[in-house]
Image 1 (cartoon, rainbow, N blue to C red):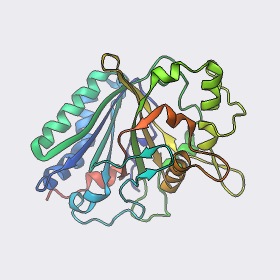
Image 2: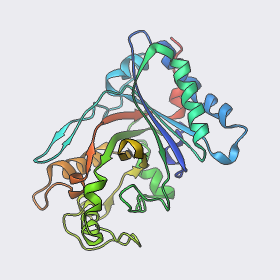
Image 3: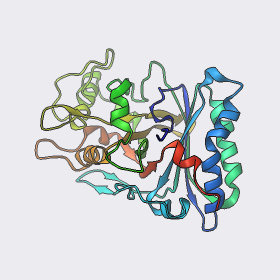
Image 4: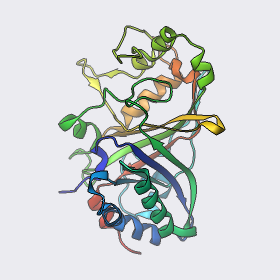
Length: 305
């Protein structure tokens, strides 16, 4: 039975998101690093067990065949599809490899990131590198609590990890990442009530409110029986106040990536019942990539050449 990567691990106080493209000729070394990634992570985190250092690796569509030496392709793996709505655009940007590194200490995230890049040397191009953090009581930089509706326990596993429906890919997951920058000056000019109507929750207590067309409503999907269709979010804030940079690094894991894609279409294109997500008036996506996250067993078995 395939062992999953630590997709389901709970949130930590620090994270690093690293997106790379692999240069021609870098495939063998990339395979070696991916096959040894679990051991590398254990070695760095061994002396600090309470820091819970983990790393999840994903592979992009355009590099899958090269990196995996021709292994069968996940059936729903394709590049991130750009969305151009009436007011907002979800861009598609390069990315062959995703490393989602988490720990209770940023120095351990830094150490593992350094070793990954050292192992790949000049064989890759860094497309994006973001150091993220938990902010106050799990709030984003717009001041609202984030992620309270995430599934937990067996529901989280059923939501994020592939089962027998995709033979050969059990324990894997599909990941979508987007780097959002917030217009905090414009956001702060809104009253608290206006902010709450935009989000669809109260700011102080995080209780859902009746706000048609809000961010919460747009991103709530139901099936034919009225059950909610979910993804597993692991978004975290990041920023550089001195550069006027305030953002959220969005990452969603899903067993069925069509759920994530439907949410994005609703956010950017709107529906017959509602317009685009009003939060996009204050948050702009500057990256967009999609990956398949194989099982840890798959990665450890990658051929060296």
